[in-house]
Image (cartoon, rainbow, N blue to C red; front, side, top):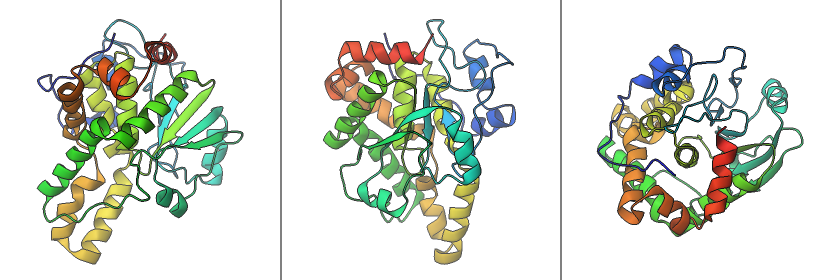
Length: 291
């Protein structure tokens, strides 16, 4: 049913995400699957105040799958923290989002509360199982990369992570109407969930990896601002060492997929044994994701 992760499958270059967005984000990914765009389908709005907001299904007519289906758009959205401006809130209200799932820790939520779409309910799922998330001190960029890869592997092996991800996927499968899930930057915890959904939809791994690194484009201004602040306050060496904590790399997602293979053999086994999802729940998700 699912496209299984493999460390040996082809990876795309880091620079491809910016080129995709410049060409009309999502359209290059869609054509990579052999699809064509329906020009009469409106694009997902870009939000100024929530920059990593996007449709899990992609852009245009939606991502194509390896079995010839097409992802539905307007069903599941992903984002960073919902610090919505008045204008962006009005835009989001038009999408009919009925449920918001917040994957942050309690302390993260206390520091920055969500501004919810009109009429939406909110649920919290503490993926990390800790009171707060604070990035560790790192001395080199290699240390930061190692931490990010370890975090991705923990999404597969950690008990709190598996419980939260399983609960979220179950809620998404059983929900009605448009639903949104998010974390702080919308790139790590959120990125893993999006990758799982694309896997369930049978989107090719190459496309899943490219979709994952699009966060670097959507968060580009924020990443640049944080890097500039770090450089000014703590020096160039610290800014360089911490840079991998601020963005995403296909190797982070690959580390998670490799751990799925090492721990469970297949993505299906991870979903059923690791996350506790019934086969019927996975099928329900698949049916919501594609048409």
